[in-house]
Image (cartoon, rainbow, N blue to C red):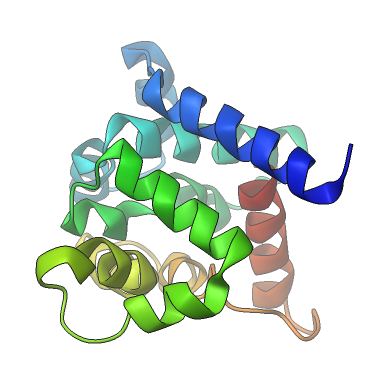
Length: 176
């Protein structure tokens, strides 16, 4: 099996998991207890597939032994900025495929105003910044805000505690 075939199979599975995503109220309540009431409301504003993804990233970090409440809050809320545009499943699929197979095209489509047919691409590109602003308004810690803002940044090195937490968030995010 070649790399492109394996990547397509993985992305197809990811798409199907997003279509069938479910969250239980008990699981949500246990996880979001670390958030401020305003941040809890933000978590619940996310699409179900983003809630499920945030919970999976949260659990992956917990299983890896991470206990930082700032990191765990960032895990739950790192994609909250996507709620700025309720993206349909097919729009998400197109974005994921473009990220993998045509990143320069995605970058071009993501420029400009978030209007018309470009809206999904622009919102996706800006969701870390939008999410960071929202969690700041919701009273989250400065470290949680930075982790959300930077969750798509490339790390050159892990010199600081912030960088180490960001690397852990990115690793859990990329696996899930």
